[in-house]
Length: 587
Image (tube, rainbow, N blue to C red; front, side, top):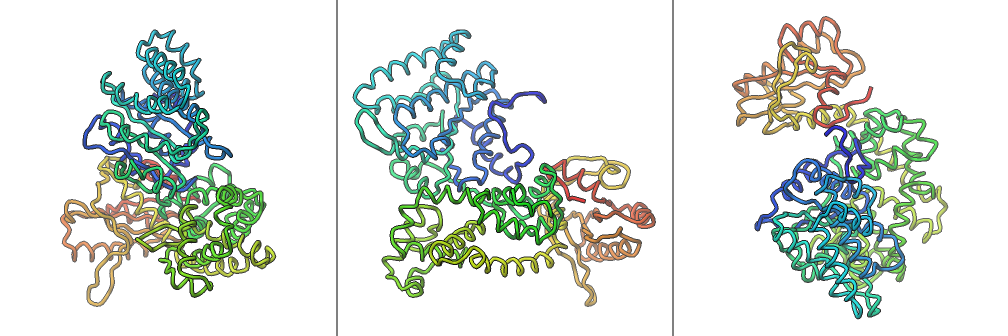
């Protein structure tokens, strides 16, 4: 099992963070097939937010870690950037060969069939060699459908979409069909009739079956939700929207990328990257792997400003290329008059706020109708999001906002590149002020994230906590920051409190962010604080844990051992963090 070959290459590997909730949800969904209570699912998010990585990991797990449900992975991602629509014949071959490839690989334990994306002729030869009657029958029926498609591709397409339903039920083979970039199918060309049509409505029966439901993804959010999953499919999917990484996981990704790329990182840099990107993973990746020469000066924060400007303004920047490609698809919609461009710029100035069309109309000198029409166009290109019947919200991706702002100022206002980024520099100085205020919280947030992953296991106390004997890591019901009590007008604050057993038992945790080892005075203060909190809260059981990244003086360590307090330095904490999928704090 350790040497198994995944049928789909996992490109992210250890850079995959903070998507356990999605994986757990989709795993439970897939392994519960057939189940009449299940709906087909849609995973929705903009490009490069990690959707495909989730689907790849799910498929690989289903392939190796269970034997009851057939996992099928079909991707239309390579049709995203074509300057033409996919044809009905191309769709049929992609969908059918994707199913057959996954079936033969799963049935006969041959992951390389999927890995190298074996074509129909190779699959035919493999099925014949294995004398797989089920696969050979499917090939015979597919060949017949292709040959009969002489006037239109409709019958072929319908057969390809629907055959997994019957095959799964008749063969008692529950099937999870995973389709990446489903919105591609909103524009399919029938070369026999010379017409384009939306193929997604043809999936009505396919999504309703309990034997072979679909899990689809899409990166054109509005196109997927309003068109691909609308019409005949309306109400037939449960949606899961991809969110940016949480603060602690965004910082974890920074630490991992630093290790992988050999780039020096620290807590200050990780906090600044989180603040700049809002947790969008591709933006984090671009900043930490940038071709900008300034990256060599990391973790200096002034270098991050130079990398940011390079990424969004230089044609060699990954973010510049990414956004250029995205907006290039919709240049026609965005260039239909100045109102759309002015509304787009206005939306970037107030990220996360509801956009009042009347207010925007007054400020840019347009009619309300013109503004609403522009907002509808901007929704189609995923610049704004509709949050009500007539309400919209501006882009929540900070890097997208900056890119739009920069391009508008250079192309429309005719400013020089230096003038166009002047506001960024002021914003960056404000950001650095926030980083200085928050930097003491980074380790605190990180330790809390690890505590939330505790699952009841027992670990070696000496290895992780400096105390001999086993230590049980409880499954906390809640973990809170900055709790405590006030006694006699004196506050006794605890950095982290983890409670379980209906709040009767707790861990009280101190996280020390300092550049020198913790001393005896630090320990004495902590013992006084936890004693006050434990007495006031009347906990039935209390475990005390002290974490100091820089370690402890010999006297402090001895005092902690005598008091029975768990204690960790960076090395011990990182070993603990690794147990729960975190990379750990850098030196």
